[in-house]
Length: 164
Image (cartoon, rainbow, N blue to C red; front, side):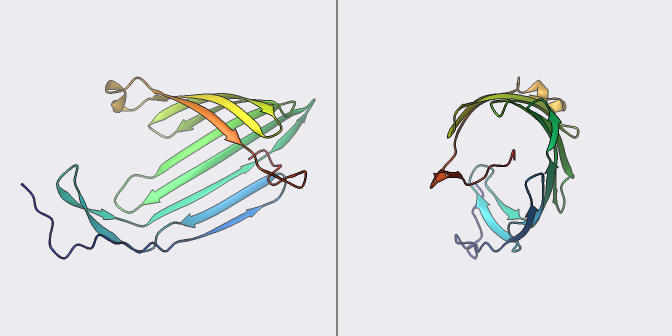
């Protein structure tokens, strides 16, 4: 049986940073959630695992299509040393500020669909399905997700009125 090295610390300092810019129609962000590379013991694989620095770049834009329809294409790129680049693109449509439908695609991995409904001003419910398109599809038949979102309000104003 593998025994972890005695000099592995069970405590890890996490230091990260990010930049996020937005207005009512667009957003873009770049972040590195942890600058420090750490080693920890992985009980599942009986080995030492190394946490490496991750980078995330994301953005989106909301187009007013008229007739109470908004369209939001978005992207997310994730990078980590020693692993393949992961890129997601998506598009969501919002109808009458109530019904949301969307599609997403992850490069060489999966496709997703979602639908949701703004039940009240402060509550949203939805459903999402993710279908793996890589060789891992031999081992799963997709992922179902139920979405329940509560939107907090302050003195009658919505804290985040954007469609993202």
